[in-house]
Length: 276
Image 1 (cartoon, one colour):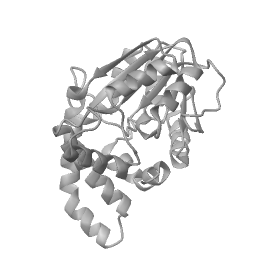
Image 2: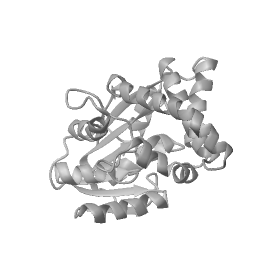
Image 3: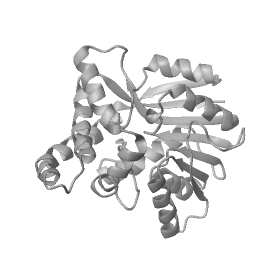
Image 4: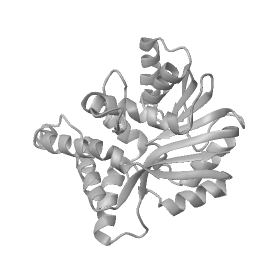
C-alpha cells in the first residue's frame, strides 16, 4: 500500500490548485448547510461546523492533528482567536504551513513535523485535539485516541471529522470498492461505528458521540467525483506523456470509487466528539 508521505507529496498540486482555494487552503470536503451552499464557502464551513461542536473559545490551546497546509489552524486563529499547533508527518506540508503563516501574518499558529499517534507534547497540554480527514491514515485508530486522551487537559475535547465503514465485513463488492478507494490514498482501512466507540472508551473518554453528517458532505463528494470524471481523459494523456505520475492518476480513480462506495452505502462521513 502507498505510504502517506508519498501520497501527499505526489498529490500536492491537486489539493492546492484543483480542489482548494488560496483563501481557505482546504484539503478536505465541504460542509453544506444554511451557512454555505457553494464550494469555496463549504470548505471553510467545515471548520465552523467542527469548531461549533466542541465550542472552541478564545485563547484555548488547539492541536490540529494532521494539519495539511494549515487550513483549520489559520481559520481557528482568525475566527476563534485560538492558539493553534499544527502537526503532520509530511515535511512538505509543514513547509507550506510555515510559508502560509508568514503570508497571512499569523501570530498564534505553530507547526512541526510529528506523528499524531506519538507526539512530543507533555500530558494535559491542549484544550482541544482536532483531526479533519486525517485520523483515517492511522494504522490503528486506538493509538490516535490514546494519544489524544493523554495530551488533552482534564475537561478537554476531541473533534474528528472522518470516514467510517458501515459494517465489517461488507458484501464482497462493497469491500472491493472500499479498498479501491482507500489504498491508493494511503489508508489501510477505516473502522466501524462500534469499533470507534470501543476505542474511545478504551482510551479513557467517558463522554463521546458519533454524528452522521453524510447529508452535509454528499454534495462535496459528488463534486469531486464529477471533477475527476471530467479530468480523466486529459489525465490519461498527461500520464502517457509522463507529465502526471501514476500516483496522481490512481488518486483520480480512487476519488471516483469513493463516491461509488458511498452510493453502495459502504461508508459514511461522521463527526466524532469526545470529552476527557
